[in-house]
Length: 442
Image (cartoon, rainbow, N blue to C red; front, side, top):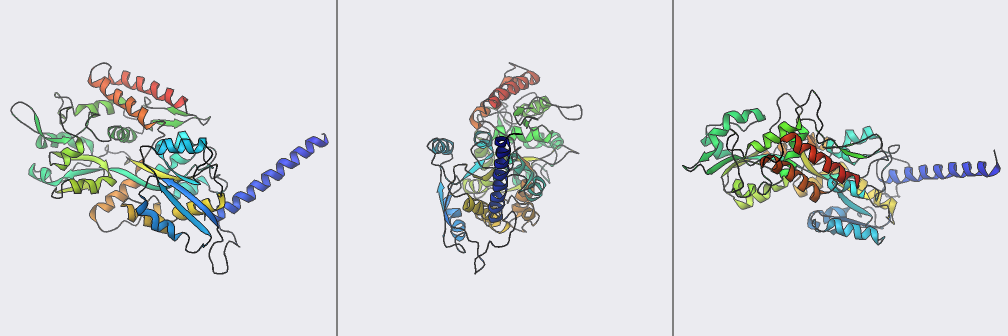
């Protein structure tokens, strides 16, 4: 062995040792591991510098929380820049292109694939995968890849089922459906039509995209309930579509598509919706729709649209004898690979995802927390809070390569079947191919 080879190997060992000790120091500040000597004389962590965070959460809701991070660290300054969700992706891309990014940026699930190479992941040697899974809700696992944890979750907004109490009670229905098969006995009791066959009172607004809020997310929820994860990561770390996959033990995706479309088929007992109907949220707020599938964050909007609406909230219906599942929008804190203050940034991420502060964020935004230990302590009031907590615990997500482009894929998936252009299996096969082509670009 030559001296140059020996020197090269020695240098590699030194670099590896340095990196390991650097990571240990960083992670100790983040609160993931505890080391002696991180405290000042008054007990506060010795963290200094400026940390800039970008995100789409309302600044007035989290400013006070961020200000408190500097209470015990007088040399630490944390600032937050609220971005418009419509231009957030564009601004982030421009920031990375100009090498002028924030230290921390909020990473929603539909941007994970796009920015996975632009973050500094937390390695599993410092934050074991099992510890992460035991700490956060299952949906948070979409931030895990072969290199480590890409971002640490901070908020989740699951889909729930809002229902009109007056409509159900008037129809002699004591409780909203818990399982989908219960719809067979209640649809005819709720849906009202005039002499011309026009629907005046609807039950469920499925089957369309143009006037159904969150149609893609509702379809995703239904697919999750048959154990179809939409996108998987293969053995090489590449994302692949499994939209058309089903095994012998599972309900095929074609049945999900036919079920969803059945609500706009006049010959189906599920018929309850069509293109001429108003927007699903507006229909529910006006008292003409019995069940609305929406996010927990929409509660204030529904209340403001009709303060007199007599409604309540429950977990979305499930497939009988199956695992409970819904879907949700999850957001996480990612460390930019261009951050100029890595240590302080990790500390801030650790603080914002700690139980105490995550509960504060949850309370401030009226969203359920993302930590399992917090979800285990359901509040007694208001009544809907426990439903939100339970829904967060069973929420799932998928690696959406482009929200705008997959909206079109799912829209075509539904409309191809409704127009009889393709049957359900053919339409799913087409969508699966299109999704894989989109994933190959990421």
